Length: 99
Image 1 (spheres, rainbow, N blue to C red):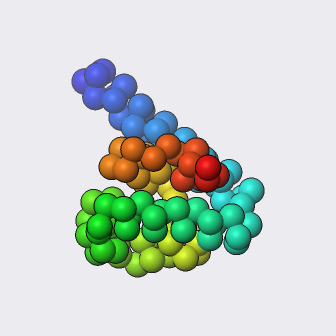
Image 2 (cartoon, rainbow, N blue to C red):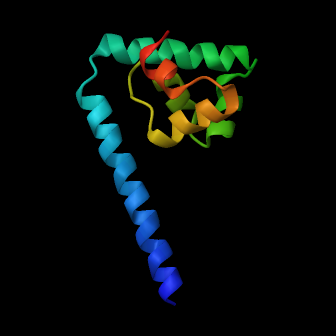
């Protein structure tokens, strides 16, 4: 029982850290920076020869989220950044900052 409680607390902390990081990333980015990240996300998708629908299934998000990410309408979550890093071998630094 104690193990279940500890695991639950750990999961809650991970989720809260993700929310905090997303808010921090979003707070310091202007539209152009989000658009640049979106372009790099599109580069990853195209290098993998995936459609937005296929990419949405890989990242476990709706297709509209992929579209919004690529247009720079929204910032990627920590989970999306980690998944993009894992499937593309592009660094999170490159995804967020380029070069």
